[in-house]
Image 1: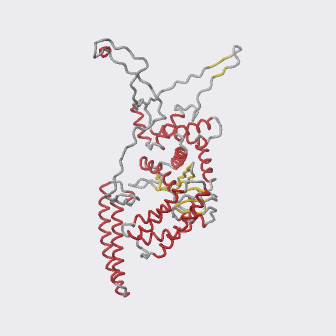
Image 2: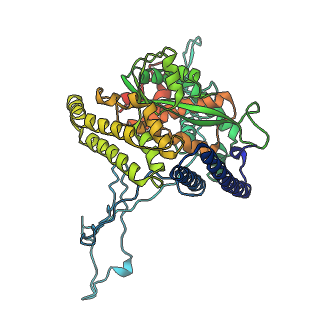
Image 3: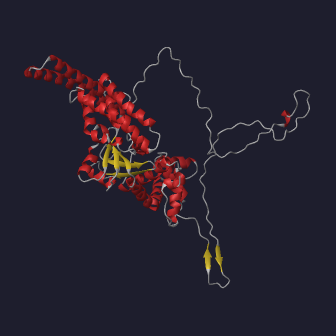
Length: 493
């Protein structure tokens, strides 16, 4: 059993304490061995001191990762005493343009319609009100629609016709397509597990089980399945895409482990500005990356994960661009141990981002600004990396080595205005998948992974385009059931 399989908090705490004690033991042992080795090799005491300090720093980093907060934010510089604090005004009432307005008139009781001055009767002042707004909620209701299809007959007795009924996901199905859309959005946009939806629906008067909800999801997925492939093809038709991956659990019998939470699969994401497509596969290998990228021949922006480089060496036609946010993250993680060195390179990376914020014009201006300003900073970072001394196995040495290993990809943005400085767009697109994984753990079958990938693709793409998930899934299902071409989300925006 590994730590990933442990769910009991107390057991995890005991494991963490054991690991802490083992780290301290190994640190002392390595220090003694390194001291003896340096004596045998005749190395100077300063080198030994540096190596021991590095071990202690590494132990501190491990302790922080185990027990500290996870954040990439660096502490802001403190304001000088002479600077006045900025006044906080708040945002005030937010406008609600999407809410329908329902007018509700309140009238006074008869006993209150008396003048305080003379005792006379108060008359209604036509058209005069004191108005204010109040956000309220109307209770959702599930209803049983009784569909009555009118029949028609001819006097000749030879012909009988029946009026058409509503389109159905399944012939004779009891639940409407709008109901299936609601279940899909609740699970894949609002991250509500099916069992939790069952409990909510029961409180609202609908008695149903999770298997029935899954049947509705599966039926809707089969109807709109072609648009998922169409969406994936659209992303791969773009000149620049982002790619990233995160783990997903398969909870079915074949993937389940005793005492664990299932086998690790991987959610692969490819994204362009108006669409994102997911594939959930059983590995994180170059072969899996090939299933996702296919014969893509544009620029792929990603982190330093080796599967993309391996796929490129195997004949991939795409150009690899790499993410500066990942490089920055490496130096932020080790800044506590090497504040001077990391502060210097982080300042230079910050200047790159400052230039990007100024790149608000057309692509030609962006490219010119990058060549004029960013290229010089890239040279400075390269010079800094070559001149900075660090032990290869130190955290600073590993951060520099990571940057050096993807250096060519980090320079692609200088000659291609369509390439962003980082891959944060793709990482943000995986947030919904991560939240869903946290709430409903994963999928119970291979078909479940396919359905999840489909709905995450359609819903997250709709959100990128500013289209409501309900609106898009209804439009896609209606088009499919009428045998019309299903639109992509950005075609409805």
